[in-house]
Each structure stands twice: as C-alpha cells, then as structure tokens.
Image (cartoon, rainbow, N blue to C red; front, side, top):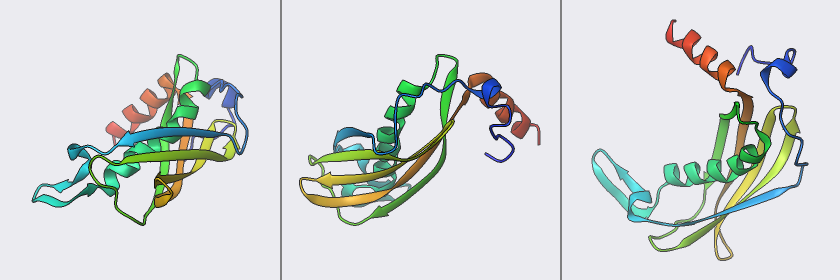
Length: 146
C-alpha cells in the first residue's frame, strides 16, 4: 500500500518473527460444485475455477500470517499472480504448497503451487502485509471519504 512504509514500523505492527525464506505451508481443497467456473451467465466449465483456485492459494499463504500477527493485527492482501495450467475436476483433491520467497518486516510474499497428484494445476505468487487493525480501519476510512 503506497504511503504505508515501515518508517513508523513499530507503531504499525509487531510481527512475530517465526518464519524464514523457504518455510512452507500446505492446504488441501477437495473441489466442490461451488468451486466451478460459474458466472452470471451460467456454468462455463464444470472444473475448478481460476478465481476459486486463487482464493485457496491466497488462503494457503495466509496460514503464515495467522501465526505471525498479534491479536490486534491483521493481514491484508497486496497482490496475487496465478498461472492456471490444467483443470481439476469436482471431487479432485488439490494440494496447495506455499513457500515464503520474500520476508521483509511486515511483508510476507509466497510462491505457490497447486497440484492434483503429480499434475501441476497452477503456480504463482501472493503477497500480504501485516498491519494493526486500527491502521487498516484508518486507511479504509480515508479511502471512503475520497
């Protein structure tokens, strides 16, 4: 977020330094009918939608944030990049692996893969920043007033 640097880092957050670059988290999703590529016009394909895959990739990376943040802090997404290579079908189990590839104060960036068995479904990167809940509320209120 522009303007939210770490000049006042101690006031913004007190991130627990629990992880290092290369640390990993995993998450499994059994693809459900509600995870398929369905839009306002109807179902496009009865397979794991890119937007649902993106949600779960971000969740897998967020597992780091849940352990790092204090009770008065929260993570906020800063970016998501997804390359979707292959379908996953309803009933398939997709294994997400997130690996920290950049860790800088209150910024946690991860590379992720999503696989069904050995088949690569997708890969990409996610970013999150940890801020105090008060700081996030202030930022949101400032934006609402514009």
